[in-house]
Image 1 (cartoon, rainbow, N blue to C red):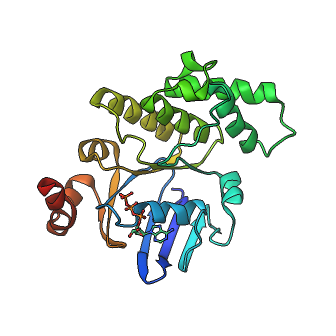
Image 2: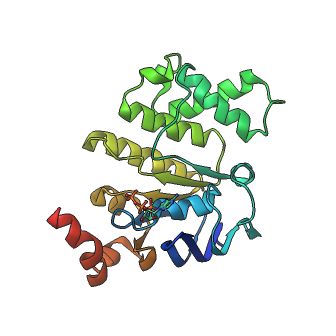
Length: 246
Ligand SMILES: Nc1ncnc2c1ncn2[C@@H]1O[C@H](COP(=O)(O)OP(=O)(O)OP(=O)(O)O)[C@@H](O)[C@H]1O
């Protein structure tokens, strides 16, 4: 059996007086989908920023494929195979949908030496994969909200990640669109890629995830099978109860 692809040990991140992530440890195996849930401000985005390298940890270690990476800048981690989608999508508006994704493919190949034609070919495969193939030649800024979510996924997949970090890729989507994104993420997993998904839509995250990890005030309060975690009294009190009141 292969070991974990990601090992987060005692990760902590402080901002001035606030501890956004507090002593969080977990592992993730290749081909596993881990759902990351918790109330607003619980530290979910901060945690994936510590993994992708857009924020350094105040304390703790992060290992990827057995290598310590917490000192590496984000672009080096991306080249190692850590891909991240952002909650706020930033497509290059004037470029076509295809070329937005080709930029990701070029980056994944280590930059400029790669032929643009090859990058475009790979980009087309990624667009087909996420169901955006027919929009390839449109300008990126002509896409609707759900289309932009898929574009963000396609851009990240073009970098050929071994670990995919998804920050709320289902927010604002309707039920049909959510089911389509779930299918895409399952197909990603079926390729052996490890996936960490932040999501507020409980029904979606429950059906998608092999495991759920719950953060509350920056601390891990549960980590286990979705059914068991969602029935856990501490989780209901900290997260689900508040959502029902909302
Ligand atoms: N750059 C920053 N500077 C100061 N405080 C920050 C910074 N980034 C996040 N925080 C704070 O850290 C805490 C955790 O924020 P984070 O965005 O990680 O939570 P979250 O669980 O992703 O929330 P949401 O579900 O609303 O996206 C919050 O109190 C937030 O205000």
